[in-house]
Amino acid sequence: MSAKAMLIGVTTIAIFAMSCKSQQANSEPAKQGPPSVDAIFTKMDSNKDGLLSKTEVNGPLKETFTEIDTNKDGFLSKEEVEKAPKPSGKRPQRQ
Image (cartoon, rainbow, N blue to C red; front, side, top):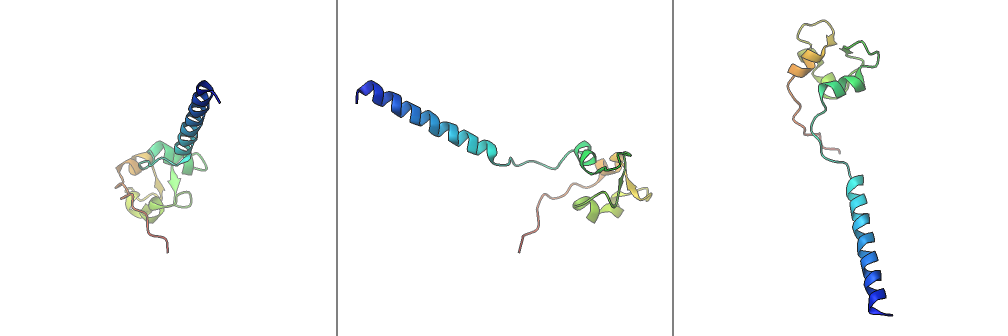
């Protein structure tokens, strides 16, 4: 095997290995902060009325719904969600 052919083979293997590493890194979920208020409403406002009812929410919003609903109308507006305390980001340990 000539030196040129060997060099091409090694280079090809190196490029392939770097490509696989790059694809693996892209497939791993990125660590993100909490979703934006708009993203929360897009995901949870199932009837698209611009308000979140207790039946539409889940997670920290459901757990603290009464505290976030400052006008006590039974719905969360975007303004109420924006003013809500942010979750700590710590998830409970799975057992």
